[in-house]
Amino acid sequence: MGDTFSEAFKGNRGDSRALFEAAAGIFARKGYHKATVEEIARAIGVAKGTIYYHFENKEDLYLAVIREGVYLFKQKLDRVAATKAPPPEKIGMLIEGQLLFFEQEKDFVFLFLKELFSTGVRRELLAEMLAGCLQVIRNVVEDGIQDGSFKAVDPEITTSALFGMVAIPALHYLSYNRNIPLEPVHSAVGEILFKGICASRV
Image 1 (tube, rainbow, N blue to C red):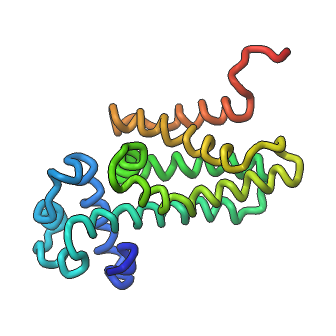
Image 2 (spheres, rainbow, N blue to C red):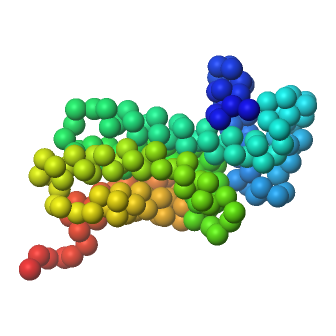
């Protein structure tokens, strides 16, 4: 089976996108155990056997949703990292890119973050999938340290903190109301990151 929907559907982006959206939405709303392949198939107007042709079982489909979402997320981060902007500007763009992706793919993001921050059996696997995305952020942090834009901070801790500063508030927002825009998160994270939270400097 293919690692992503695009591979499983051999480049038929329309079919893979429809299934990704439907599966992510149903898994996010109902949870893994209550979601069924039959319901997902009905949502996109195909027979259950069509999905089983591409995916071995519900678990295979579920993990394919996660892989596809992480793949799309990394693509967005890679585009930012490839720009010629200086590291501080890139960090701001990465925060904005994360939030834009979270806004566009709310069902997947809710599903992924809820699983990632749980104690479930898939947590370690999801962390491995996310590692490539975190490496993109870390590279920008290390570039900023090297050129003097950033202090000599620990790159790994800083990378985790940057991701968490966006992911945790986003998960909070999405848990209560997925119709709430994430712009307040963007503004707050940028303010805290670049200006701190102290009212005055000593």
